[in-house]
Image 1 (cartoon, rainbow, N blue to C red):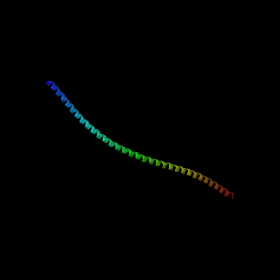
Image 2 (cartoon, one colour):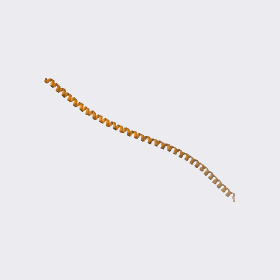
Image 3 (cartoon, rainbow, N blue to C red):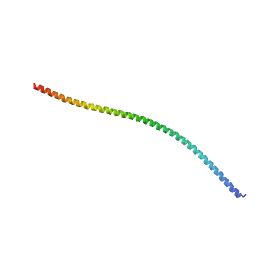
Image 4 (cartoon, helix red, strand yellow):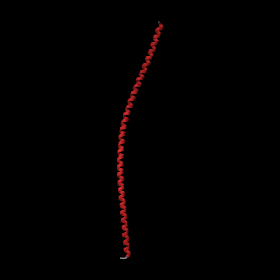
Length: 118
């Protein structure tokens, strides 16, 4: 074989070796990237679990708040009904007091007439 052919074969072998080394280096980089991605995924799963726990706690508190709000709303309606009843009672008492005042004035007038007639 000629030296030129041997030289070309050696160059090709060198290129193949360089390509293999590059592939090995790329493979190592990819392995590191995969490990990094796995770590990131684990961290994200942990954070997602924490977020889910926080959301559940917020939902539970919201349920408690809703129940308290319902109870307060019922208390307000009860107080409103009581206040309306008191207003109606006060209006009745005012009417009765007005009638009694008129009767009292009428009685006083009658008494004056009787005293003047004597």
